[in-house]
Structures are given as C-alpha cells and as structure tokens.
Length: 262
Image 1: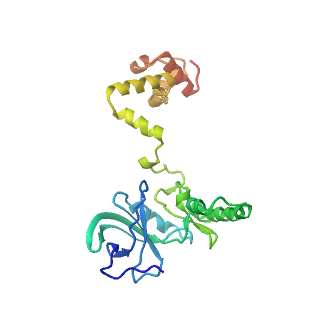
Image 2: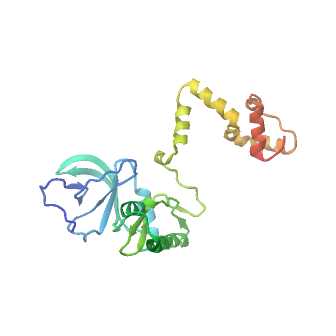
Image 3: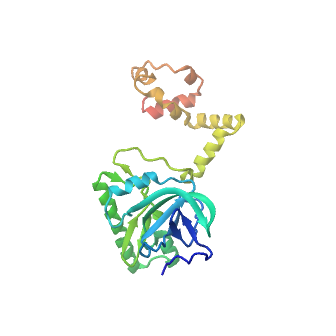
C-alpha cells in the first residue's frame, strides 16, 4: 500500500501541495513520473508528470476533449519548486493526471520474456484494446500522432492498454507538432553539427550535397509556379545566377526532383 511517510521522514518530496515518496528520473525522456500520496486522494488515484524543462500546458488543454477510461483525466497543471525534506531542490513544471496501473508494454515483456503461443493470444487482445481509445480520439476528429510502446501502459490483470502522453495530439489534417532533439537520428544530428561547424566542414558538406543531388531540394521553391518552374514547363527554363554555378549533376537533380526532362 502506497502511503506518504510521516513528516520528518527521509526521502519525502513535494511539488506545490502534492506529495510523493520517490524521485524518479529517466534520462532522455521528456518527463519524470511519481504517484501522489496525499491523504485527500485515494490510493494510486493520481500520478504526476514533472520536468524542469518540458511544459505541459498544451496537454492540459487537450485532455478534456476526451472521455474514455483508457485516456487519463487531468487534475492540475502548474509550475512550482520541488522540495525534499523541506529543502528546495529545483523548479518543476508538472501535470497531474489519472494514474494507470501497469507497465510500458516493452518493459513488461523484457522482464517476462518472449511470449509463447498461448501468450500471443493475450498480446493480440492487449493491442486490440489499445485501438479503443484511439477510435474515440478519431471519432472526435483528433489523432494521437505519437504512438509508441512507451505511451501504451499495459495492465495484464485487466487485459487492457491505456493511452498516455497526448501532448502531440492534433486535429485531423493539422501539421504534426515538432519533435524534440531526442527523436533525431544520428544522421540528422551529424548534419546539424556540420552545418554549425567551421567553413572547411561546410565546404565538405556542400560538395557532398552537389554530388548526390541533395542540394536542389533546398531550392525547391525555384520549381514552384510563379518562379522558374513555369518557364521550365514552357521549355524556357533559365537557371538563376546561383543555379548556374551548380554542377551538371546538380542540374540533373533538379529535373529528377521535378519529374521533368531537360
């Protein structure tokens, strides 16, 4: 049974008026998580996402749009100093939501081992249950847009998966929300480093772009109606001054990218 320790006990934490007994940090994740144990709450009723960097105001506004037992209900969002044994530690942004019993589906099977044939039927049941909250969101005209194992909380006793982390939820047809650098591939991070480093490395980057025909993609607007694209369609394409300096391979890249013949 989860109960807050008596005042004065060690390892007691609080943010605002909300108390929890464990400070968990997950490097590389956008949120840490704790189960609240205030006396006015039922046991395991509310959980708290908290982070000094991430803001939860968007998710706080999105959650009331949905009413489904496998989607968390919000309680409060805010910003306050975290205390340990009455001593200030760091300012945290936080979001209090329904606590779902269970575990990340991948972590669950890492501990349990690979499922056998009999377990596979339950796996199918679990993932089928995850479609229910998604269907509810879709019926409201929204999509989660950030589905991954860490956002599916499996409760094997109930045979269900709950959906969490709705901060990237968008209306159907809207532009996908930007992702943080944690999601970038090693190749993307290398590209950013090259773009920011010295002129010598920038020259190497430019050369490699010309050779593989990537550089034309950064000038895609030249092919749009109203620019050089219309002249190209009429067979009167005249490259701009910048384009005239590109290699023959790069010019061919333009035509490949546009689907037109030179």
